[in-house]
Image 1 (tube, rainbow, N blue to C red):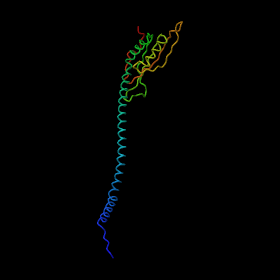
Image 2: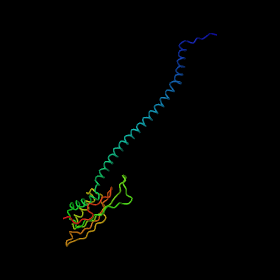
Image 3: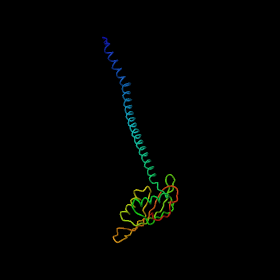
Image 4: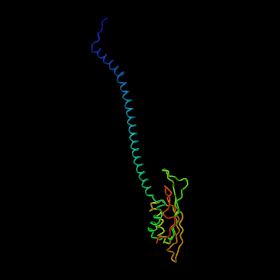
Length: 198
């Protein structure tokens, strides 16, 4: 039998194929799998970062909204600054704004509203106000508009009684009952009962 010699090139080629198989199975495939896992982890991390960035943005927006609301609340508290001690002056301003001269103004002493306390632990008080006057219907509307929209106090109109007076019924006799509400200390009214301004 003749010995067949394998050429060096074939041996080299065979060794190269074996080396490539070993590299592919033990190096490339694990690195590829690891790379895929890392890409998935990177994607998850990117999504989490985006989520947290959105949360931070929303948190900042909420902080701004809270600041705006706190400023509005402070402004509202300052606006509602009519207490029992200033009620008589406010009623006088209302009458002057409406262009009427009251025949009667009565302010009762403040009374605590049971069970009504603010978040700052201030008691809610009410002051009953009665106004009697002769005026026209447009003047009455101005008077009511002042208490409902223009005054810095928190008024509630309890009752409006008016009857036509005079032959042409352009003038009405009015009895107006209001309640002023405010948080704070029970202050004495500036005037618990006053007659018409002259």
